[in-house]
Image (cartoon, rainbow, N blue to C red):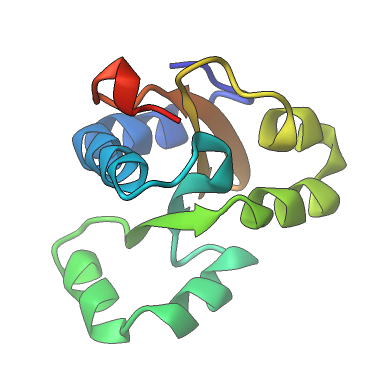
Amino acid sequence: MSTVTPDPVRVGIIAAFLPKLTQMANDAVASGKRRDEFVLVCIDADEAPWGELVRKARPQSELQEHRDAGKMAIILGVMPSEFATILARAMPRFADALTGLLPSDYCRCICLANGGITVWYLRPAVAPDKLN
C-alpha cells in the first residue's frame, strides 16, 4: 500500500475497510473494467466539501445508523477514473498521485477524510491473467 499525505485517521479508515475495498476492486476487474477505468473511494460523508455530494447520493438513514453507533459515516464506492481527474483539477498538488501512471497490476484508491486526501494503490486479489 502506497500513500500520499498519510494521516492516521485516513490510514485507519483504509485499514478498517481494506477487505471490502479489495473485494470491490476484484469485482470491478472481474466485470471487465480496466484498472485505469475506475478508482475506489472512501469518503467521510460528514466532511465538507465532499460530504454534501455524498449525502445526496446516499440515504440519510444509512448514514445516521453509523453515527448513532458512534462510527464515522464513511461511504465506499467504485467511481469512474474521471472522479480522480476532477479531484486533480481541484487539488493540483496531488495531480500526479490522482492521475499519474499506475503501478503494474494495481488500482488507485482515494480516501477523503479528516481535512485531506490520501491516495494509495491496491492490488486486486485476483489471478494475474484476470488483470487488464
